[in-house]
Image (cartoon, rainbow, N blue to C red; front, side, top):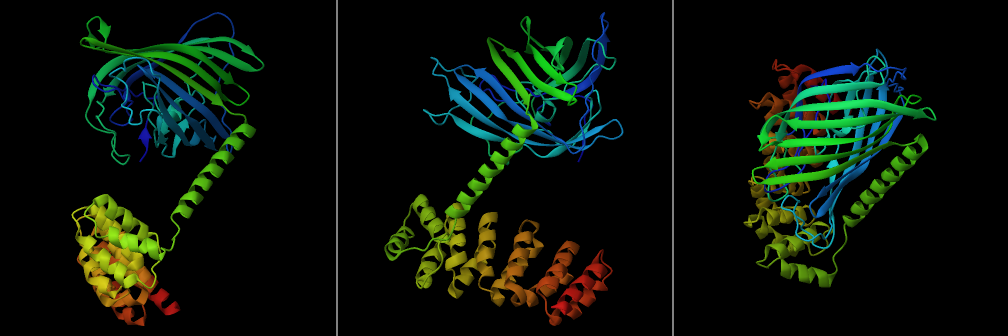
Length: 512
C-alpha cells in the first residue's frame, strides 16, 4: 500500500521513566501543514536540482550518535538508492539498507534514568534496524511525492529513506526557509525489550509543534556547493517556561551538481525534553556520506560475502550429526528428566541427528513429551520425531496436530508426512480447513504424494471455497486418474476459478 507523503516526517522518543527511540506510523512526527518560502538576497547563486540517473546506484554511509547520560548510542550502516526511473520530472528511487545499533556504557558515575537498560554488564549490546525495501518518488526540488515504506529514525530525525534528501530552493536563491506546523507522537518505552515481531504502533502522547529549517549557500569549491543548515523544533505545549519538546541544531551540507545529489551531511543537534521537575538534553550528531561508486560496490560486495558466510555457518551448524552410542545413552537419560531445559536440549539434539537402528527406543522416549506442559518441550519433541518417528508414533502425532501451539502442530504435521500412512494423511488433511495451518498442511500432503490423494479429494466439497481451491491445486500435484471424476465435478460447481483450476489439475494428472 502506498503512503502519500508530501513532506518528510519526523520521529520522537522518550518517557519520564525510560528513554527510547520510537518508530514511524503511529509513533512519528506527522506534517499537518507546510510552506516553503525563499528569502531575497543579493548576488547570484547556483540553481541546485536533483538529477538522479536511471539505472544508477547511490549509496550513503550513515552514522547517528546520541549521548544518553552515561551511555553512547550509535547507529551506523548504509542507505541505498537505486534509480528506477528519471522520467516526467520525477525520480523513482528503490530503497534498501540497514543500520546496526550499538550502546556502550561510558562508565560515567551514576547512570541516567533515561538510558536504556543494559543486560550485559561489561560489553555493549547491539540490535539490527531492519529496513523494509520500498520506493520513494521525489521531484527535482526534493519534494517527496509518495513513498511505499518508511524506516523510522530516533530523535526527530525522520526516516532513513529521506535522511539524505533535503528540499531545495525553487527559485535558485542563496537562502531559503522551510516552515511547518507538525504533530509529534511520543510513546513510552516498556521496561523490557519487546519481540521484534511486535509492532511499534499504538497510542501515545501527541503534541503540536513548529518546525523551521533555514538553508544558506556559503560557498563552492571543486564543483561542490556548501550549504549551512539551521534547524529548530518547538512544541506549543510548555513545561514551565520551556517547550515540552524542543530540538535545535546546525551543520553543513555539501551538494554535488555533477551527480545531482547531496554529497554529505554533517549535523549536530540537541534534543530536549522538559517534564515536571525533570529535564533531559540529548546531544545528537548525524553524518551521511555519499560513497564513490567503486567504494560502494566494494562495501556491498563485502556485506554479501559476510551474509553468505553467516548463512553457510548456520547451515553447517544445523547439518544432521549422528549420535554415538555413549551420547545416545546420555540423551535417553535426559529425556526422563523433570527439568524443561534438559528436556529441550536433549530433544533439540535428536532433532538434528539422523535416525539409526535405535529409532524405536528413541521414539518411545520422545512420544510422552508431546504431552508436556511446556510448548517448547512439545515442539522440540515433535521436531525430533520428524527423524526418529515410527509407525508407533503416529497416534501421538495425530493428537499433537491438534495442539494449541502453532509450532507444535507444524512440527507434528512434518513428522506425520514422513510416515505416509492413511491415518497420518487424514489427520494432516483435516488441517486444510484451518487458515493458520493450511500452508503447512499443503506442504506435508504434497510430500506424502499419492498416499494422501484419497484424504484430500473430499475437501473439494468443503464449504470454504478457498479450501476447495487449495485441494484442487494439490490434487493436480499428487493425484492419479482416480481423482479425475472428483476434479471434473468440482469444475462444474460454478465456484470462482473452479473451472479453470480443475482443467489445469486434470491436465497435470494426465501428463504424469
